Amino acid sequence: MRTMFSAIPLLALSVSFPAHASGLFAVSAELSHQGKAFAAPSAVVREGEPASVEASGADPYRLGFTVRELAANEIEVVATVDSPHGMMAPTVVVRPGVPASIDVGDIGLKLTVKRSGD
Image (cartoon, rainbow, N blue to C red; front, top):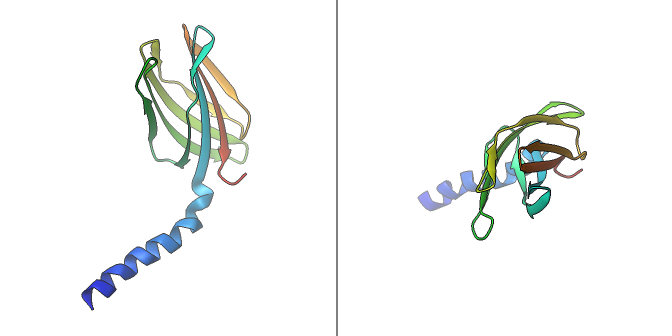
């Protein structure tokens, strides 16, 4: 009987997750060095929760970001980029589905953010 009761909360959690889907965002990024793209990560993230993508190899990097909806057409992205090519920590406000580009020295970041399901 005890096993049966402990499984019920897990079932309730999995059923309630889709109700929060409106707080999900699809983030696509492109990292570049001297204008040449070296990575194009993407992720689906929950609003307000820090997320990151890392890669090793010839062009290692770590891209961190937190996404927050400010208004219907304004999404704030707080990002950090760390790579052998350089580092940056921009905060940008983007429109859903409209790419935004940031260049700091030789390193560039292009972001596109959409509400998940749009």
